[in-house]
View 1 (cartoon, one colour):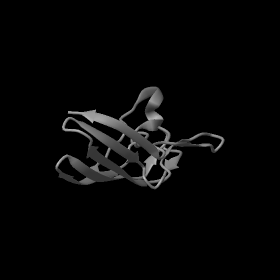
View 2: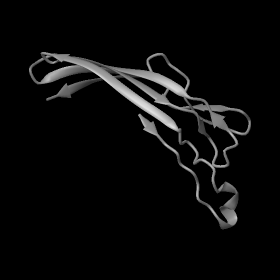
View 3: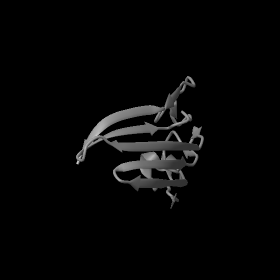
View 4: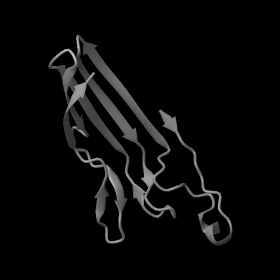
Length: 120
């Protein structure tokens, strides 16, 4: 868990920003992982939370909070080689990275699948 109480310290031409919250800085964020491993087989589930945050430095656009889940599974093929599967954002939750002036929404971390081989 992280609690962030950040403010901008500005003067001169940027004085209007003084005391505002930096863009993309949630006040609350947290992550937790639970995993299991036995005889080379492994599974882990991670929950990630990011609180509301401002998209723009002038604090004019607020992005909502986000809760996502990731999973990782590993299965041994040989003594030194394992198959690895990872899914980020399992439920394809919407995580906004930004909203432009026309209202278009930019997503961060869409649902993503990874497959690979791990050599120990």
